[in-house]
Image 1: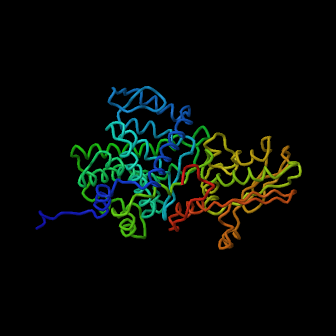
Image 2 (image 1 turned 180 degrees about the horizontal axis):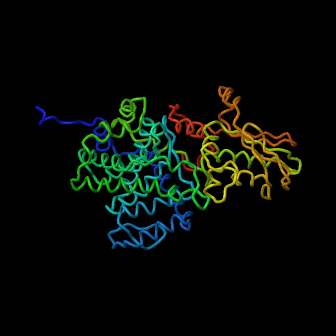
Image 3 (image 1 turned 90 degrees about the horizontal axis):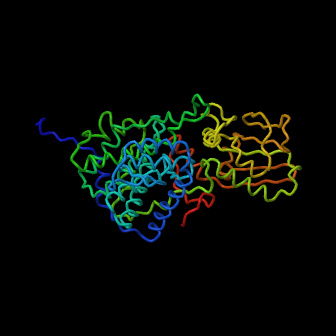
Length: 445
């Protein structure tokens, strides 16, 4: 009879069952990787304490002081409720674009975003260290599965919609939610908080800068995950079919591929947690696009004895990097701040590694060269996207960030496979899983 009809959500049940039943025992490699993720993220947060976004986040948190049962606001002696602490501390992780990132088959993003919420709940519940580490590993496992199964690009959604699933999974485990509660928490994570990718539009605000919300969007998602878990713990219910319903999460992703088979393969509770070791860690506090450019510039600088002999520098970028740095940006050639430089091919940091002085003025031509126009710089610099790079992908050329200095006959190339895979994932294309590149590693392997 109709009144006895029960609707089921296959995706919600699958994830909730996994969260509750996967073993919390970590192999030595996974435990070490979870520790590295925590240490790296705390270091990243400390560096960002004076960032304007972090200061504004703390100003907000200070308006709602908590007693000794609250969670520490990092870098201070003050405390806040767990959800507010997760928001405030999470901003620190994104201020300098220095925290790790994870590249899945269909999506990519910053997996360590989840940690502000996970640490807050571990502190609030006085969880032992081993339970915290297993929750971190579980959260990363869920992030990896979500990035493999879903693509946010077709629907125009932000990666934080997927990362939040990892935060909810980890927090649900720390709070000892049962399968029903975990399912409700997942539903309250995805339905009320769809985050648009408009934050990555590249448009500049009235100051000519990127919006400060870029430093808040991930922390906001994690705070929502924490609140969803707390509400589920006391009996609050979510939408009946948050993932597979008519207007549910899967429908909103607007994907052609069915995510369920991938989720079933990835979220097998009999397989030990391990994917926390797949996250890439950055060597420098810049976007992942610039990592290989800096490495190439440093190597080139070490080989050039007479800088005045350099006539030209060309940096070749594959399609995904070019789109991210140039195509979607409002004014990529005139960065005014650290944030805009971090998303610009004219970021001073790679070329500063080659020269002691700043760059002179110049002009850019897509597929051409940037030539000096009255500047004192001994060489010009440019970023290129050329068709032959894609044509020669089989030879590996399109997987390299290249810095070329003519005059000394110098050519330096560094593999940037992670960037290429992330570019394809951003466009919604499936990419094969690949090992980490040493260019990005700072943590143990």
